[in-house]
Length: 160
Image (cartoon, rainbow, N blue to C red; front, side):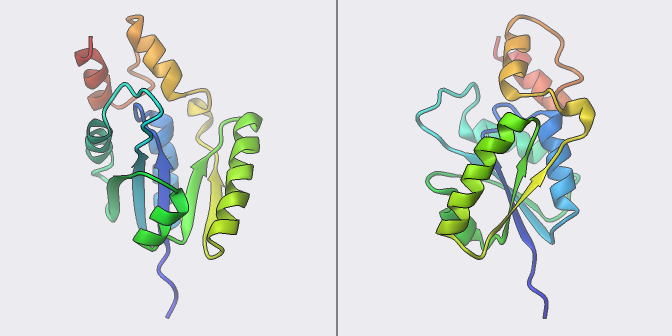
């Protein structure tokens, strides 16, 4: 019997962008079950709480069956083992992303030999998007409609 392909797409998702969703949809097609996990990193100063980010992800991925949204603290590979994931999906936008992600993939492989890291490139119309730039545009009153789902646009507007 073939092994069930359980994917894990981790990130801060502060906020979730159309680029994140593009990667999630691509990852979804490559596995039997996809977990999207918000990293709870207490050293960062996020705009949205972990609970708010999980809720926004649940709302924006409800069209995808077999997707579970959660959060975790600690090592990614420990969480991957906990949920029995055998694939970690990471999005790459630029060469600078690759250098960091490549190092992390090698570390994760050493910590958990059974897991594969798969790099996905977003649609070119989303390649320039980052949560940081979205937050800046929203903070300065710019229109983020083309960059984030409507529910995220409302959540950003409600923060003002």
